[in-house]
Image (cartoon, rainbow, N blue to C red; front, side, top):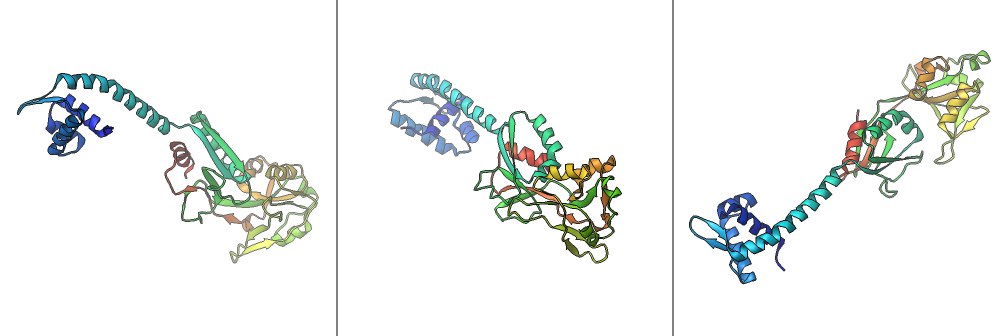
Length: 293
């Protein structure tokens, strides 16, 4: 069986009709090209080129071989280019893991990315637990903060997250506006149960005087495990909700919700898109650059 490289070298020499030019094209020494052609001719038992001090031309046997090989290699090159172009095309499935809140905050951007890349299928898996994206075969994950394993790359995709306490104007016709987190003990606070371990989400605040983080115990009539239900209940005047400000900004702007304890607002690090430290697909790279801030 002959080396694929030998046939490439043969075709190149047939085109250039020069050992020197062929050597330059392939990055080889002239002597290496000459030796390789001589070895090929010995293996075939036939001379492929006429050689003179001024010219290199194909023999009849060489022309016949050239006519046979040229379309085969052209077809092979075409297939290789087709595969390479397909791999570079933005298409396929991207499996992304993140919290429901992170997807809610990124929804407009993700929709815009989808419109720009109709051949990419985005599979979003919403989960509050910390997922091993390699083990569970996700292309990337989203989490707060950039403290990850050394095998991961983290790309910032949001600004800091500011929390807020909100309720409807109707709610505050029955309850006084709280001035400190301690006042929440006298309010109907709608709590959130974490799907990860079943515990209730702590309401945290940042002291405006000491910058100390305060974890406030609250009580109330309702407990949900869905962010949208929290928002709906606050809009309906059921109680106070502790939630990311960006998720309810629309309702704060139009007056359907009122934010309290703003000077005590807790601030969390930005969200990061993370993925394994290895070569990534063009589609994932495109998403990373689209979401990067």
